[in-house]
Image (cartoon, rainbow, N blue to C red; front, side, top):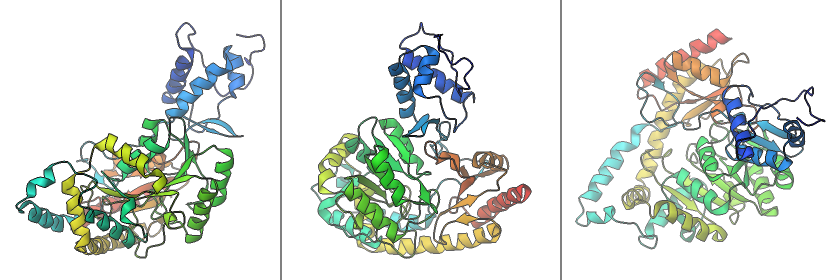
Amino acid sequence: MPINSFENYPMSWKPSIDKTKKPIYQVLADQLKQDILHEVLLPGTKLPPQRELADYLDLNLSTISKAFKVCELKGLLSASVGKGTFISYDALSNAYLLEDTKPQHLIEMGATVPDDASYEPLHAELKSMLEEPDYEKWFGYGRAGENLWQKDAAVKLMRRGGFETTADRILFTSGGQNAIAASLASLCQSGDRIGVDPHTYPGLKTVAATLGVQLVPIKSENYAMSPAAFEYACNNENIKGLYLIPDYHNPTACRMSVENRKEIAAIAQKYSQFIIEDAAYHLHNEKSLPPVAAFAPEQVIYIASLSKSIAPGLRLAYAAVPDQFKELISRALYNLNVSVSPLLTELAARTIVSNQFEVIIKSHQEQTIRRNQIVNKYLADYTYFGAETGIFHWLLLPDRITGAEFESLAAQQGVQVYAAERFVVGNSRPDRAVRVAVCAPETLDELEEGLSILKHLLTELT
């Protein structure tokens, strides 16, 4: 211990490490992880300044910095310029929402899936395809230069969601998360930082953690990202880009105003920031708004996936990519996939071009409205966000319980919901809230039973 140690200083963390083990920075990083796992350090705890910790442990400052960097890349820590380094609120949360098997003992109200109205028309189209004489071509490799009309189908789908683009900008991907992964892999290096909402899509969190990309929460106002906070991050947080879900945000079910979209697009242009705009839920509003991509088409990668708007098993998404990023992302997609499934690409294109997808979307909306009428009956006395055509809601809880506690309590009573802690980013404080999926229960009776249980729990807490 150095002479000028902080033995009596009120430090939030006083680790004890074995300095005979090497490398010491990794030993320190492992100790930090263990102290988080064993709740010696709680989420939101501010760690001592690195110089103070270096003095306390009698180590070089660079050793402390390396240990902190390792933990930042693992998502355990969140650093903010001028504020310090904190234990991430999501350090122990489970961002993998889709379980290996469907829970048999729970009413599933966690996974965001549309109803099964699309299955029959997709089956009919698929059956027709496989009865064609040259059906075997659907089982080979897909090549980007073939069947360019399929890109016209992508343009049509995006137009339906309020975005005008051209076929030469379209890339096919194996789902929205695949498009996000390829974008981050091609545009970022390990250690790069991108801005996100304080609560965001868990799939982004898992991809970012795999690639070593740090997520920086950008403050929101009324659940919409603040343009002023985004500009502040551009100037002070060393971010390289932004990830957004402007339409029916996952998990908060809120929608960004057109004015905010314009301002964020202008800031991205001013600071040369790329934006990944996730339009997974762009068809879950009855009236489309112009996306951020419409105001900054040279900065925005616009991703329109089909799993939430048509069917979850249709693992396909379309990405409209600016020229400056297209070659990089195209290479990343090849490295990740080689190619997308020709079978699914053709099935999706035929469904869109024939306008069958319009029938499917309308049917989804009708089914979802019917289910949300039941939601309104049970949760009318509580605060929750989400449109009548939306497939999930953000349910705010009484002050006496956290989202994680409510998720656990609901599971004990036979209902699966997902807590805000699964979605929170970095040192953002998670809402006292849970995401409640509307279409995950297989029947209306099952939905009613699940909502009845949730209402009973809420009543006991108020």
